[in-house]
Image (cartoon, rainbow, N blue to C red):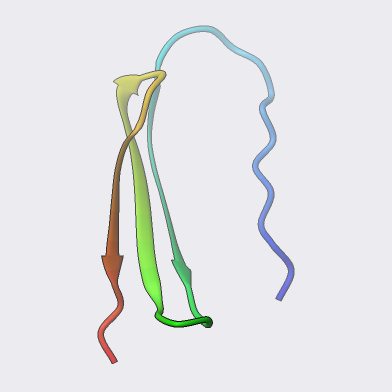
Length: 51
């Protein structure tokens, strides 16, 4: 599977978006989410995926 890319296309101001992804493999699987609530800095969460 090829990685997704995100390209910045310009603009000014805060972001209002959520980005989520799953990682499978290694010692454990997990999911992560980055939330940009009208901000330039994300709040993040990382949790284990259930088997």
